[in-house]
Length: 165
Image (cartoon, rainbow, N blue to C red; front, top):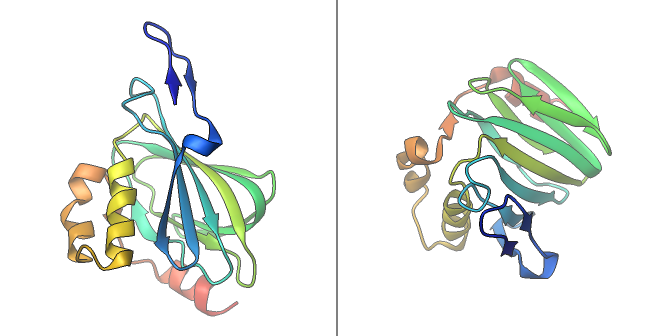
């Protein structure tokens, strides 16, 4: 990563980005966290293979979340509505709106995810990877909900959409 003192330039080379697995079918590429963007945004790439569960219903109190589909097909819960996004589609979820996302059944999805304003998010993704590897307990995810501004909720609409395709 290259940052320029006194300027807002941030350059992340693909070969230098941390790549994590938070499940057998999900890869997260860490691009820029809030500490290098001056708090402006946090950016990651999510590669969700067929069968990925994606992210369960949750909301953020402090940040909006932008989804840009680089390739594939993505289902996104926004409130009580489920949208199917295709390559090139963009969706912005404002703070406090419950949302979830996963590849459309039988598909893959490659997406850019941006939080604004930025939040210290990369340690959350590292925690997800440690849980997947058995190095941390799943309860730690809920215990860090305030720190990482990730608040889980139930969503009958998401459950219905994911089980009736």
